[in-house]
Figure (cartoon, rainbow, N blue to C red):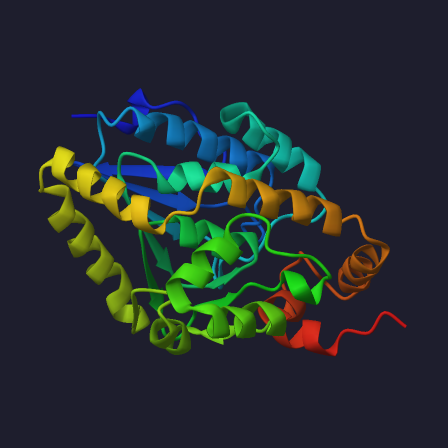
Length: 281
């Protein structure tokens, strides 16, 4: 059986192996922002899963209280995009997350904190999503900065929840609680915090007992129906890269930085509300 010590070293992913199930705890203080280190770890993990030799199920969770992945690190956009290019050949987080959707394992996001922007696109790239009623919050908030979702949010949400709700989610840039996300079809289930981990644990081990070839064949057929093509992801990635260079976008990010953006505290905890009230005058 595989052991953790047999795997390459990871920078922010903590790994635990139980049979055919790999548990991945994301721990990149202070907030679990997507930056170069997390992308490098994701590249390593995808390369392992692509071989299809060891793991049938992967469960992602967070080691940071109140946050799963709140968004990308806006100060390191080019750096994390360059890190993604090591695997996908282009500086695109979207294409990297699309590769996560195609790995030869069933991926589950166990969400007990904020997921917004690129963090939401990370969980959407997973095969299943389960969330804590008390602690999870969801947003695709790029419009609040003057940008567009560049890593799959447009593609996944439109297919999952439909045009009207996707327009609401993206245009409002607001936070949505787990019960609303469940009702919209954004996540599989909202569960009480005390039940979230046991539920995901038992589901992962149940799936992990089934024949690997069957799981992957079914995943490939579902992806053939639901996963947008590379050109759609590439276009969104290009649009995001252009938008973050716009003067108004830079101005809004600067204004947010002055009030605690990308730092633990009320701005990040209540970012949906803050974006609606932000003034750059």
